[in-house]
Image 1 (tube, rainbow, N blue to C red):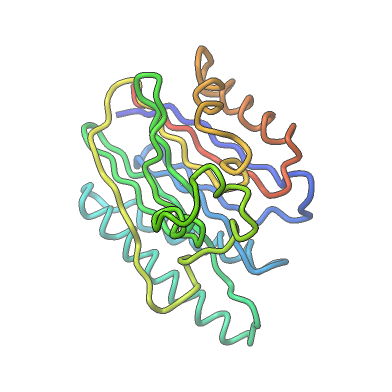
Image 2 (image 1 turned 180 degrees about the horizontal axis):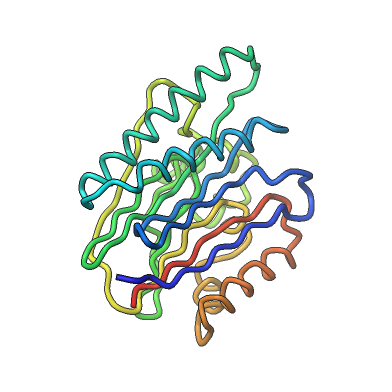
Length: 237
């Protein structure tokens, strides 16, 4: 099955370096967005290592085997980033978030670590498929913080899980059945902190996928884009 897709990445208006990395392999039905952390060079290296690991695993035959290989590749990437950080005696964690979409006719699976998100746009509604691995999300889940306060909370950037952050590591997943006309959005928090679900739906409505990608990027840049912004749109025919 051929999937229509469009990807965008931009350094934004405040950062000097783009620490995000993207993967688009429509011929294998695999896409991913990784958001590196750790400061100059480290974040860029971390996200690139994670994306390379997913890309190498994505070429596995068979959907279930591909999911297993990508999961294992992320676990290996976690070990590699921890080892690199120790070897360089870094004081800060060298790590990355990641969200990946694996798609074939009749099945999809999203894998993620951190706060890069996956959304499903279906029948004029937007559903967030992933749950942020973050301090504020834990506070929301515990009833200690309202969901509408989470994005602007002073600890909004504090992650509870990332690739390379800890040897105690787990990849979360969600799966389902795609429908014709579905659109998946994978995005770093450079987009999701500035653009609401309703705005995502509005920018996608009545536009081609390429035009919608341009519109989402321009909307984010127009709001100051203090972080790198990267995303992938994938449409099911």
